Length: 74
Image 1 (cartoon, rainbow, N blue to C red):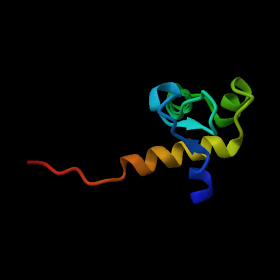
Image 2 (cartoon, rainbow, N blue to C red; image 1 turned 180 degrees about the horizontal axis):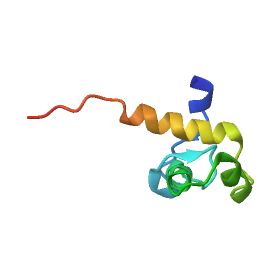
Image 3 (cartoon, one colour; image 1 turned 45 degrees about the horizontal axis):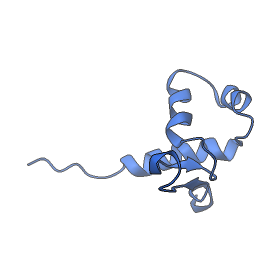
Image 4 (cartoon, rainbow, N blue to C red; image 1 turned 120 degrees about the horizontal axis):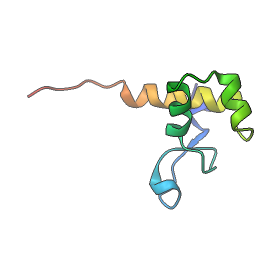
């Protein structure tokens, strides 16, 4: 799984420092948005030919890791 996460890069001078895929200007949030509107993995790969199947997995894993933390209520 760590290899997948290495596909996600963060550069403060690119896309406002938002997480991107392999240094490209394709943000993790772009991939997630496409899943959210109902596109399949195959449709996303067709729509964005620079992406690979592992990039989609990396986006989902990255989002899962970022959301998997406790929420403390005061």
